[in-house]
Amino acid sequence: MYAVIKTGGKQYRVQAGDLLVVEKLEGEPGAAVAFGEVLMLGEGEAVTVGAPTVDGAVVSGTLIETRKGEKVKIFKKIRRQGYRRTRGHRQLESVVRVTSVAGAGKEAKWEGSIDLTPKVILDARARGLGDAAVPFTVPAAVEATPVVKKATKANPVVTAEVVEHADAVAEAPKKKAAPKKAAKTEDGEA
Image (cartoon, rainbow, N blue to C red; front, side):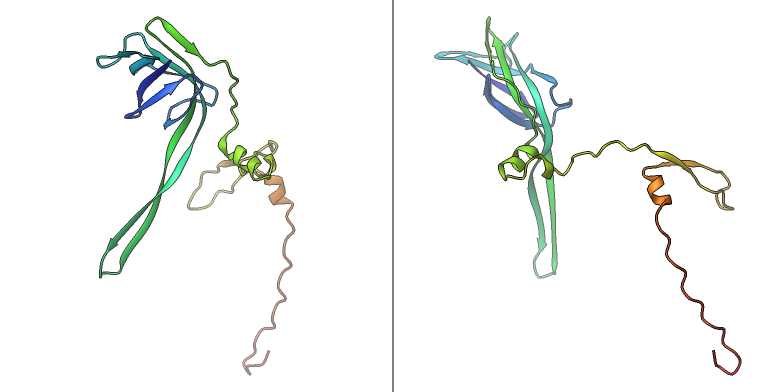
């Protein structure tokens, strides 16, 4: 059983088990997503076309990740003027695993397991780098300590700011003072 759904201003033909890349959807990885705008349902030769949508038809899925898509380059040029500008844009997109297509009294479910591993980690594994090469791994939590700033004439209010690794900043070795030069005399000698 398949369905044609509309989301993000585009139409997609999906069936249970498909991996779908759509415009950005709100939600955390692992969240359930339901597409209610089903334009058409089909199973074999039987086709149900909505006017404009099929009543009671729902396509359900699981949000796997939200990421940036491929970069689109924008190049502007005005000839004979020396004007050239290059920009880039990466659109946010969501990856959804379609788990079921339901409507017209029938339902097709996907019985596989959903892997929530993001594409970045999968690409690193494919290159043989393992999980250690992932740029967004978070180190162990460090307790933040408040650092109190001194009051100045320009800002008489004393504020406390939270600075991470404040202990590491306080323990940093200080540079030695530069040797002082002898004062010049009226003769011009030092």
